[in-house]
Length: 198
Image (spheres, rainbow, N blue to C red):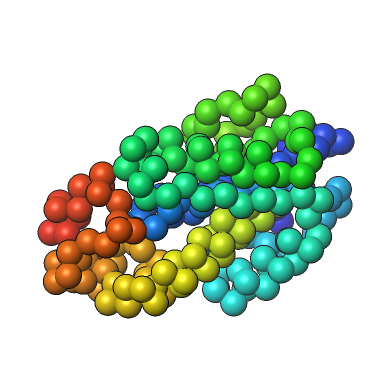
């Protein structure tokens, strides 16, 4: 069972991102503040769930959260500032859009750039520990997947509808055959990656 809160009585926002390890598309982050006593037996790290389960949970989270927000950082911005900084920027943008000001930020991972003067805790594998981080992982993943589905129609050869921009064999084959698109991240060392098999 995932934990509801880190510190009882505090307004806590869970934060997570999706798309760090991709060749193409943006990195997406979400911030979620869940109500006291929120319970959902299905809610877990998004990677442990099916696409159908994630989409069902997305609706529930968006309806029941006290506040939630999702933000993107484009592939061009990733190339300028690197993927780690882009992940932090996406989280900051999500916090800027959040309707409430949290008293504590729970971050999935081991690093974060402080946001304003709000205290934060970094928790490795936090999306499998705290409900609010798990909820953020669901929103970040489903919103990013939706974005990749939308741009798939422009470049169907890259199979983004199924691989979502991750370096799968079909994605690598398409890059070798067709080159890169305006949605690809040129700062990634694709030449080395393209030589690697799974």
